[in-house]
Image (cartoon, rainbow, N blue to C red; front, side, top):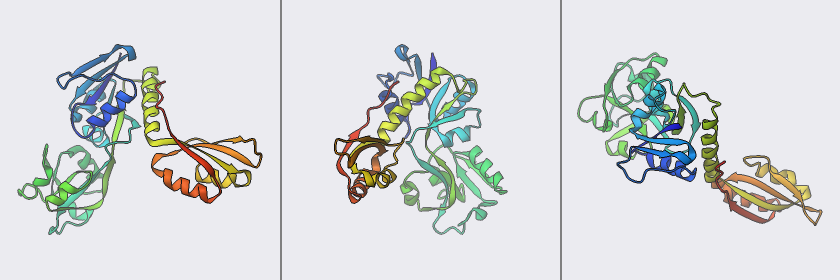
Length: 283
């Protein structure tokens, strides 16, 4: 039975649970359940602390896990990123007080940095030829400067509101772009059929979340223009119509671009545009 670790709390937990549920897997019925056995799908879900998931996966205690790229890299384990899951997007950034003279990456050299991601930051600074005193903090990193513990911080930033409220400003390029990812144990072969089944299910849901089907009719002489507008997730399907001066086109297009694409299609003479939601595949 495939063992999969999922976050029991935090910003990745709800999206991860929803993704698994829409993929056809059974979730826990209450917050006290730590393990759920889904015999019909040959899978066990283990609800673990987000910071621990990469450790368990890296050791091979569980086969797969859903966590953040930042947490994976900070763990230093041998777990392998397998799939991007499209939620929990964030950046790992430096931030300092508005009045601080620290304004660039070079200014970080020799400073005290408050962070929860010691290993990730240590590796990053080493790659840049810089040294700093890293102050490990498990939470409320943004308070460390005001309390005199650190000169600046390095932390995960989603909207930046918390930093601004603490009187901090981000500077420099992002240290890392992170999001929710599926990771696998080094002991689980990448071509394992159980992994392939789960991956296909997740991909089916992710595709249904991001794309829609767009059907439209277009004059034959404008097909190339129209297909250029809607190249789609896969190559569009072009079918003849009874009126031989027109053809029907079906394309899978990004959901967030639908209105713009429709305007452009009308501009090249398209008609009868129909947009249909995709159904997630569980095969």
